[in-house]
Image 1 (spheres, rainbow, N blue to C red):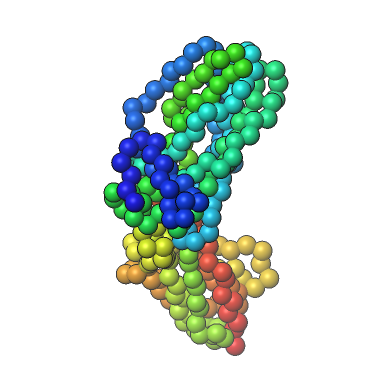
Image 2: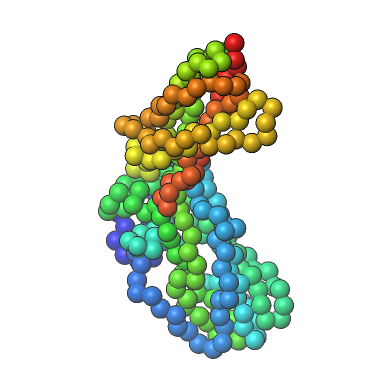
Length: 261
């Protein structure tokens, strides 16, 4: 399955799911009359994080204004701002009237990771990053507006992070080795692979304390592996924290509690 032109809809196996692959065209903002988009919020202001198996659904809330009142949305599309490729299916659109002139129309988008392998003429992982929203809105009096780039948001590859602190228990003042692994979703083979060369924070929470504090920053090695040695001064829990990148989601590992002997 290969994407070729803007707005092409592809029917996958079984004919039950539509995957839309979009290639960005030149920016435009045109139409007729005074209808306008005044605000757009994607996924409540949060990044859209896509893993290897779980369906992801997110809203795009578009505030529209026209003197005659708002009829609705006739088109919504999303794609990577830089390379013009995107994926997703609009499964629902509802408009809520806020006043005689203004409505908030929400398009619900969905992504199923199983759609993604071999879906583009290039590696589909390249679509992670900053995306934009285009939409066409219509008014009750026939006014319409084709609006490009009404919002930006990030689509990120999901990530996983593990922690292991040993030995447990450890003698006070003894050496503790904290290891782990940072992985991220690959949308081509729907597996998680180690993410090398990333700065990850080692954090510690003393037993009985409410919060973790950062001890040091360690860079992931080959296959995303982490390892560092620390001096054990008190009992508590150790974890790794990855703040994320433009293309990869932030993640915090579960804490590994270590006792003193």
